[in-house]
Length: 53
Image 1 (cartoon, rainbow, N blue to C red):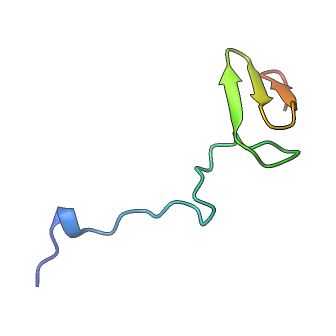
Image 2 (image 1 turned 120 degrees about the vertical axis):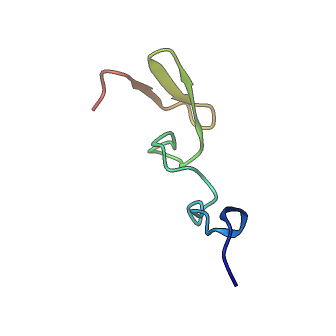
């Protein structure tokens, strides 16, 4: 049987179901909201700035 592109194996997302793009809160793990140069957690209020390492 020949495997077609439609049946090709696709990468699976992380086990948590979240993307691994660094936008999870360092404090509570919730998804963070990015706006301009500020990244804020709507769950706990933790804020990062674009100048933070």
